Amino acid sequence: MTEIRIIEQDPALPACCELVEAHWFEMGELYGDTGPCLFRPSDVNGPGAVFLAAYEGLNAIGCGALRQMVRDDVLSPGEAEVKRVYVRPSHRNRGIARQIMKTLEALAPSMGYKVLTLETGSLQPFAVRLYRNMGYSDSDPFGEYIDDPRSVFLSKTL
Image 1 (cartoon, rainbow, N blue to C red):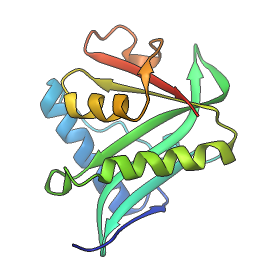
Image 2 (image 1 turned 90 degrees about the horizontal axis):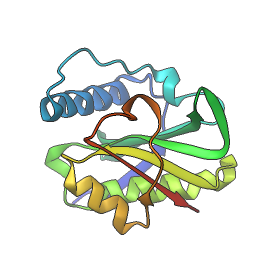
Image 3 (image 1 turned 135 degrees about the vertical axis):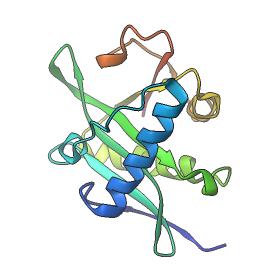
Image 4 (image 1 turned 180 degrees about the horizontal axis):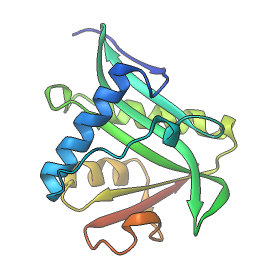
């Protein structure tokens, strides 16, 4: 097995866009929404944001991002939203998602974040279990998924 490297990347790079598209496709298949990917690299780029890509050799195999949390159309100081955590199916069950999350958590304080919040889905029990095992607990709903009964909202104070 080759060493896994997790590095900050520009989310507009082709390898990063491909990861996000694969994530979007998988979530669409799982939740029944196979519309076009609405991802804009600017969503996880710029001030208060970071995009990470996990590489095995030269292959981009996973990603994750932070951006400043927005609640009721207002930036929430000290709080970041975890976005786009994804590992290609062929590379799962090797702890890569955990590595991505640990790297995001390590970066967050230097970016001024004290709390990380995320939304995942009830049809993703492995993701929910990972986050709970890492110390995330139930939190208030937010964003476009606020009324979706399949959404699971979690947060962690660092």
